Length: 213
Image (cartoon, rainbow, N blue to C red; front, side, top):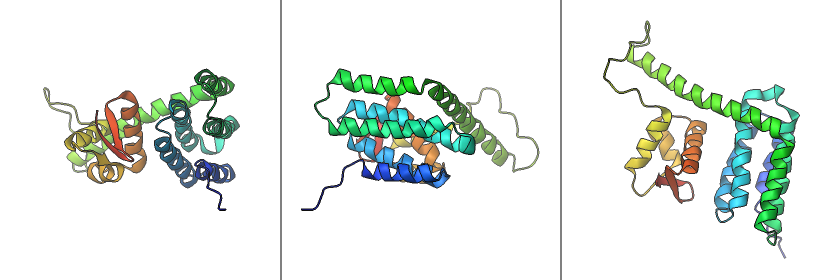
């Protein structure tokens, strides 16, 4: 009888690859597997919470690269093991599931402080970069960018553009189409969608498709 593969096997395989080599490709693969798994565990708030805590580590690794704290990979391994235990032991009560997540966070509290700082910096940098690029286009690529006229609205941020696009599609829109319409890269769009969904600004209609909440 053929053994049915466990839903975490693709994630574990990508983690082993990431452990062997930390690169944009291996980070992106692991991040993608987390997103796929998050949709599969939609009925389990504890597993979703654990994935939400793990995803920001990917940006941390992108920024820190070779100088990344070894605790970051330790966190990913421990988080994956904890996630596996949550999915394997269905008899675990809600209190015990919450306690396991708390223990994980307590073990890497200092790392998480740095992770949060990096992700906040990336959010600000993404907004600033978009504003500068828009100004250069408006100026024809020559000389200083013109100052905005008094009374005119500020230029839309990537987040504004993504949410505005989602709003136009009442039945929902997928990530690939959002990337094509807004012109922003996959990582930026996915990050905006992830945060907007977490804040309740948008909702998942079905796998990979989002609409205004």
